[in-house]
Length: 577
Image 1 (cartoon, rainbow, N blue to C red):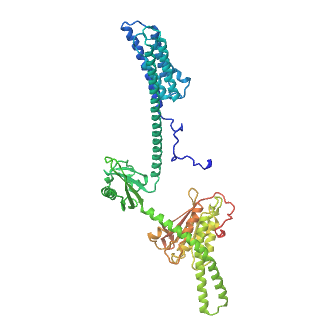
Image 2 (cartoon, one colour):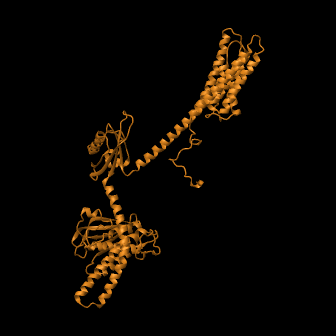
Image 3 (cartoon, helix red, strand yellow):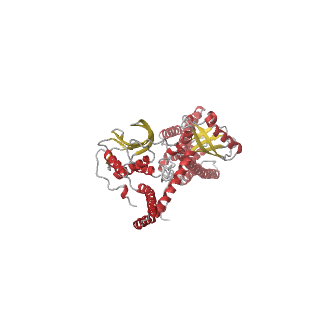
């Protein structure tokens, strides 16, 4: 595999055991290092105390040994006080002379100079153990070899003394030196194993910590609620989504509360009890009472965690999903699929529809019989209706794939509204009466001319179907507040909409009429969002010649532009098809 193909490290990649940065906080070598320095200090105090005790017991005072003990005590005390946090590098080198080297020398001198039967030979094991625990294998073998050579040298010096068993001296030195080698190697292997185990433990602890952080981050950002309940019905954990579903009663509660403390959560408590009783996963839709909007329908799935410790018991993990969000996601997916299918069908319908309309126009020129002309007119009207449906469907794809308008694109609000309304009225002056109230003089808004005309025409066509017969049943008004922006309102005195209709006003392919495609308001919202504007519906009262009348109003909130720029070159009607 090429080096460039090697995957980059991640939080979930295997950790490298030899990475110095990963294990920079391992504390075992430091503790051993300071432990050995403290042991050397205590040993120096013991040696000096032993010499003073011998003097008190009428033994002759050896000034040389006393000075050696005092020097060793000072050296060990300074080493302990001035020691670094980390031990020296484990390789063999002169940096070990102040500790291991000094110990070998001092203990050998004590053994050589000490009169009587006091034996300091076991003390030579101290530097060997220090080298094995903190140093390399070479340092361990070197320390053991140095201790053995010093013992052999002492045996060589004592062989000329009268009454000395030379063979016994050298045999004792050899056996003691062999013991140094064996103990040093064994301790070295144990120290290396301890270091490996601690590195492995640190790696696992670090991986578990990272995984816990990732889990907490994922759980906190889940759209679904997560609730963990133990066998005592105590809530051990819950994420923000679960708090939102449980209502304001759970917003300030810390974990560790009883799930049944509020009557509104009784359904969840009953489901948790059933899960523990039946020892299996359950699925159920429950109702949670909340002050606003009243009742939340929640889809709950429960799972039991496996536990090998019977004393710890299992935990019940409850996954809470708001059914409204589930239905909204399903509806969005269906609408997206329907939109893609409709756009594809519209492209396929356009060509045969154009051929039908053209053939019908040619047929109209030759038909003279009134009955046949009515049939031709019927074909023409339905072909035009199909053409509008196809164009509405294709407009959705155009709006979604068109790049957003530049912020410099601006239009004079009152001028464009007046022009669009009068153009719309000229198509049928008798049926399209309206009242115009323009009070945004001089206001320029961020919008494309053709797009704003399309939005306004769609709103006017929609209002025309439901307005009353009066001349002021349809009213168009503009307002401008510099601190809040500009607004455009299209109001009609139509009847009150049903709540089920109002909820889906701006969804594609939704209409309360069988002859409508349900795309007009959806296109209006898409165009508004493209220009940073907002559109919403509200039921408001409006002044008319008959007094204040309730009606339906569509309100656009538009962004102001300080100065007009050149008109946009890209219009709604000139988009690529």
